[in-house]
Length: 229
Image (cartoon, rainbow, N blue to C red; front, side, top):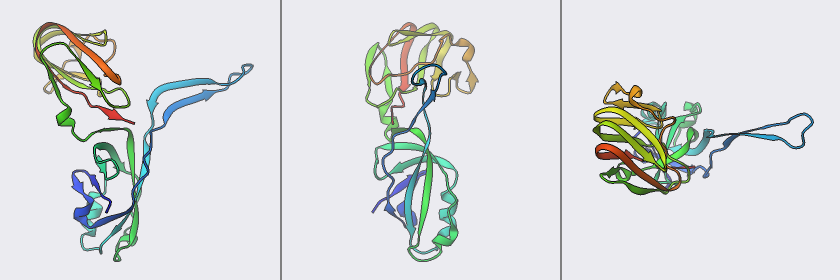
């Protein structure tokens, strides 16, 4: 029997059966093709980003005793895990209107559509976390570069170096966190963007990534956020 987890709850706990799981889909890369008058072919404008897409799951219910609970659960956005890829997490939201009329009789079916963001993440995010006390090389086993969460513990002026690119931090007091996904630097709830001197934010390319630093650093904690298309 197929299943899915959404917002921390399991479809099997609601008596939902899956008659058809979604196909495996790769996110579409955002590319525009521009015709230039007087020029052969087209100009390719590649943003280097990917578009969200929709996954459809065909479901059925066992009666309508917990219908209100099901409808309250299948709403909004949250983390989605599918039985077809149990080691991956999608960031998803309910995309379609769920017809109550289709759910009030025994074993009637309904279509559930999730609009998912382009990347899949590791279910074992906590297990993927790294703690470094010396320069090292780490490996991104995903299929696309990751945008990590990096916390540097130390003091004073520090320069973090990843794959030869420098990311300066100024006047660090005990710790500072770089969130590459959100493009923010902070300590606790305090914004620390003014202490960051990087032209861009760190990222880990697919394969090997060399990490080193200069300055007074006791350790670095990294949530790598490995991801897949």
